[in-house]
Length: 247
Image (cartoon, rainbow, N blue to C red; front, top):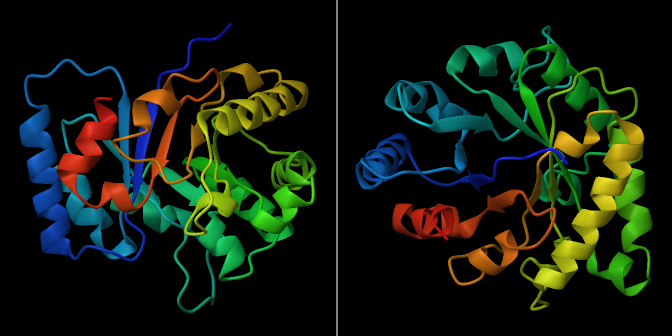
């Protein structure tokens, strides 16, 4: 079985200004100084912060991800940001299909398939997000929904560098709670799909993104096939993020 390094990724969403982001990085690097650390750290700031934070992270073990990208390589698409631009700004990864992009902005599987392809063809690594809603889970459709999102979004995927993030939408801001067992069973389902789809599927890191925080990080990371965490609100504070990273 492939050994997959654990990844702790923090998604800042539409939070933190440039000065706040620089302060976050400085605190994080200071607290990590001299520590032996085996997990990979990723941060996904707003587009406007990427270039400056990339310079801040030179020589460190912190990687940067963009939160989104255009589905086209270039052209007359006002307001969009291409993969080439993101790479030039210092990003090495791109979130594709985050639950908020799917739920709030209506991004469909066919569009996300294009984005996953353009990310990998542009030399970056997609973090492909999947997840079911509360209605879908209560209706017994959870596994079917996740399989469909993976099947369509990764159809004819041209690369071999990929990260998948499972976000149980039903457990984010609904009052419902996802258990480590929920994570374990869905990650096992995702792994089975990836191994059937790609000869390199056993090497794909699968992150859990359902309200991860310092209090539940260690238990989640101990589950089979949970290869890391995609952290939202708890990633906005460097101390909280570090607690998760060191859990």
